[in-house]
Image (cartoon, rainbow, N blue to C red):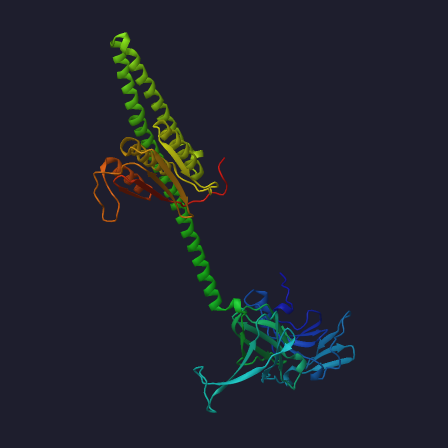
Length: 487
């Protein structure tokens, strides 16, 4: 079988014109780039797959060749004499080589790194005295380490190097690697520079080796410590800060979503609790107001049925009056539960109409002092209901106990509170007990008013003097302000 051996395996040139074998087991080749030879054993090892590289020794114009291009296209173009001499034909004559008299160049060329460029701009290479342990040392018994700093944002780095050889300098070959980026050595041939694009920030070490015309490589590579500086957003502190901000943001968002979900759950529970409270209150109102009234009407109807005809009209009058009271109570319940009435304006309108009708039916003159325009504050049904019942209780006490002829009701509104003042010109309270804060607490009705205001988060006070009337003050806080008025 046949195996193709090319420059990939280490041949100096792929165009082979002549092939000869000497007495030492070497194969000689005439090419378009000079004459070279390689051990036959190495060629067979490559053909058998035992290795993938060949160490060739080549000769060029610096070795005395009249021409690098050997003749081709006819045979015999080369021959071996009986004395072991090898004869090759070139474009400028015949070359005679005695393999026994050739001496090998065993001196590897020293390598120097001439310059480093970042995007075409030369960088300064500094020399630092180092001990074998790597620390800075000031004595003369130390090694020198060369360093270069690459500015941030560099797109291309170029390393220019050279191998010093007085014998066939055109045959000097190189290989290099950038430790930290290259996994293996890069064969550069006779190219004397290396290029890297978009190298990430960090510390690297550039190493380069050279071999002479006989394939003898440097014993140790020439190295250069390369520090590619990062942009500010590539620094560890910036990345750490970004990670912390990102983690904090994620934690904050998660906490915000969790709190938001919890608030929604609490709002739902609060609405459910308010709904249960409203249903319970409506049930109590229906039981207390309508249930008791209907029971009373049933008794009156039964009495009217059993009474003589001449007394039936009295019971019918009582039944009619009780029916009007139940109608009024039903109207109050409907007003209290209707969502469209959950505004301060609706509350003042309803209280004003109720007070005027309620006192007019008792023959008491009513004076109302209320603002013409009312800001659109929202009031929940429970607050409206409690405040209405407190006002109703106060007016009921005036009708039953004050013997007043006039009642003045004032509404005072501030951005923080609503204050309702109910003042009559009656006889005042006779049985009194003075509270420590100046409020007079007397009777079940007064206790009931104070409890209702407390449930609204408000305050209740009453002041009275014998024969000078009584003043009841109800105050509740205003919280949520609507965007528009309810119609």
